[in-house]
Image 1 (tube, rainbow, N blue to C red):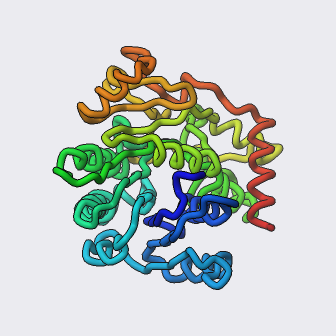
Image 2 (cartoon, rainbow, N blue to C red):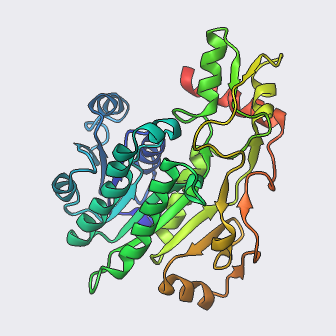
Length: 335
């Protein structure tokens, strides 16, 4: 993509599921390659493992930068001569957040503010922050911190003054097979010959694969004007369909919904729906007057007034489709 040609891109959380996939996308571009790609993360072991996949001698544009988004001075050092920041670093485990709330605030909220201040000071062109469906009408601490971060990034567009930095958000649902998600969790239980733990058999979740998440972020980086949330149109799955796809017998244990957990997730709340627009493959929720005016000028189709976008009233993956996704996931982790 010509948009990234001769540009410098930094990925926070660059060794995570999304970060490493986005790195792979950038480094495998056949033409219009970026000048530099910086992997920014706090995990030295994951950086070491990623270096073996993408060694600097074979990929001269890649840099590995050890740091924590809680450390603004370290961010400022990393942001030197960077054009675009893709912010994927976060603490995200819902149960952990409920018992360690201040640690999630330090990373997800204060860390986001550090990125905003460093980006403005270092004249970053665009910051694209990754968010989650749990930020829409949050009922858990993790979702609340991500909602707060979203608001910080959107409002940051009013702080730049004469500078050109813009801030936008990409919000999507569960990434199929990512670390801590239901698929590796269930497969581990099966390997241990244990029952699959189900919180509620009626539970539904949104589903997106990493390739589609990368495409969404690329699109947002290219087309954002600042102050908007990009939301993809994605399918859902029923938790019991995951059970059917992953094992023949229903060897399950129902434990009840955990603190901070929803039965169904949503990507656009009813309140957000009043200002949202439908662009065909995705939605935009403008969060500033500038982004609202841009959507109106483009004459984008309005989202359905008084409706939300939730994982229950949605198109569902079939059991056969889930089986194929699980098969592909197993092939990836064994290859």
